Image (cartoon, rainbow, N blue to C red; front, side, top):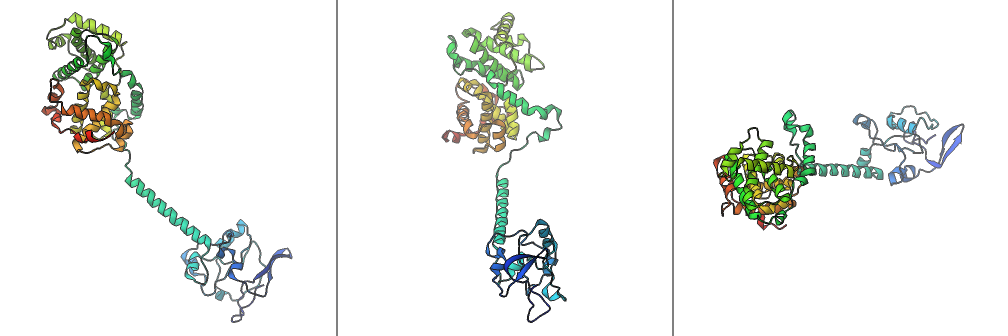
Length: 435
């Protein structure tokens, strides 16, 4: 079928095709030509034309050395079936020198004797044949994939990951890890119910925001002397504001409202509740037992017995855990938020934002630079820019905490029990930051 080599008549070369394929005797027979044509005419894959299936198959090292490099056999490609392509890929062709008795045979689509699969490295090592375009495209594509993987790995390493803050508590039933997400989602949904109008004091005719600040500052000291739980203080202030928003109060009854609110908060939060007489004594016997109980009845009815509201305290605990706080940061955060309890203008912020801003301000105070990581932002749902307005006010409160008449919070956090948090240098650089 093919022509003989003049130097080695026992070796047949693949015949050149002149007119494609002819049907003869039920088989496809190549038509023999007289002139050897250019490589570009024989193999379309070598000049950038659309490659046929299985034109090149990467072989292993042993199979690669089995192919002779001296006189490479150039395959004559024709449209082939998948079956033929698989056989071509798995067939190992011998070198021309190893063919002892070549037997010309008719080319069968199912069994190919004239198709040698040339390795990619053979093209690279032999300057006589240009590298096929599809090989160049494949290599470029693989290099691009490797480059993209490297870039993705760099992004993963540099991007700050959000920590699973509940991973360490999975075996602690008191941490209710399975429900903690739903619990705080409910808190965020219902926190608006615990908020009051930031200008409710306009409805009061005999009291003002300064009197409220005096009352709250005094109650913080009472709370400290009675050694009550933190939850009790935050609920007490919440009950006072919600009651004053709905009920007008004369000036001489304002302290009674504060004492009664603390009694209700103790009944809700504390295990051991102070007796009414202790509260009367702490108020310098300004009220009788009957007056306290009557105010208690009026207050719970005005609030419709709704004492289960999310205060800043519940958010503080969760957000401190997200910030991986130590004792110093925790005490400084509570110092910031208790300063905010005294100030009437802070009622415009929801409890969750107050808690987040207190922790952010405390972190800036401790580290002396802005600090708000991805984990804190994820769990609080507040970005640094959203906290900046509230944080600036807290820094201003910190600066004047030891001055003036309302120094109850400053004295409380100037003790060893509270880590001398009030003595920390205010984060004044936050005041220079533009919103």
